[in-house]
Length: 223
Image 1 (cartoon, helix red, strand yellow):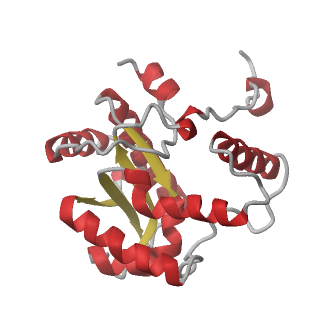
Image 2 (cartoon, helix red, strand yellow):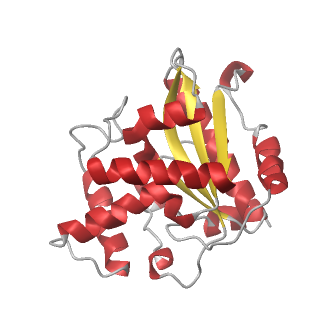
């Protein structure tokens, strides 16, 4: 698969098949992804991989906690800016509305939307769950490095016929995640990611979010 094909076919997958992914494939993906760039070659990423019985046990634990406290434990960072301005605010709103339209959950159905949001904490049925963390000493540059590492994983997954779902929603359960996988206190949980085979028949996976025109974000000087 060409890189351009991997980029074009990658989507945030919100419904996975109950089909296993071997540990060998996950190791191959992570082994290749470690070539992602990082300033000063710091390689500031840390990743935990859950599958099988440990993943099932973790999801059962989270399910109980979500039922008792749907809003989670709070986050250690702002997933979105507190006062999100335009055009970003409109883009986020449209993305949400378009997603819920695929599964026929109108805006007034608050309970339905809450229940769908809770599927984040099942990794949307993915057989592999990953958690990413970064040292608390790191700054904005190293958070960008972590993002490039994750993007490498998502594109390499496509090479193996797999799909992914990066999930910052996991930040609201940072304490529980940290305790379960024993994240050292000097590291901060950034997000999770589901990895597996996409359910091609599920309507939510038909969503293709829009992208701004090139001239809206690119400025050319001397070319």
